[in-house]
Image (cartoon, rainbow, N blue to C red; front, side, top):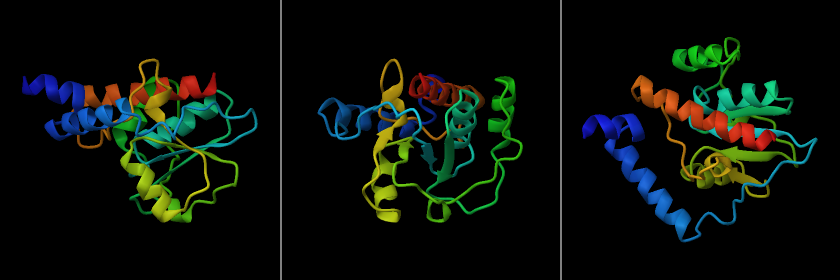
Length: 178
């Protein structure tokens, strides 16, 4: 049973967070963050916690699909490379994260019409507290074929779950860029 939890949700805490966010989404808490399609010339900024796993993959994948995209992190310092597993995952999909360096949201230059795509609901308040309101926000998982409000941070998870999270990020990006 524990193996299944770790493979599907990363950890027991990840399972609890997934269930909690799913319940909140079912009662409409995240309705104000719709999976809106960006305008053709609108830049998409992907935001996660550390800017080493989810958001850099989303950035390079969106760019490979022709979208103007950037990424940054809520809880990182500037100038660190992407996680080695994220670099390996990206390479296996024909993408390159070798030159990626982390950028903290406070040091990122947002544009007024950026669409901000966050990886999990906890990022909403963190983003608004650090950057302010006024930007259109969306949750990455809401773009997936089977929408979910929460794409878990795979940083401390096993390799199978890491790949599951990164695949979910890629699915969301594909649908954003359709």
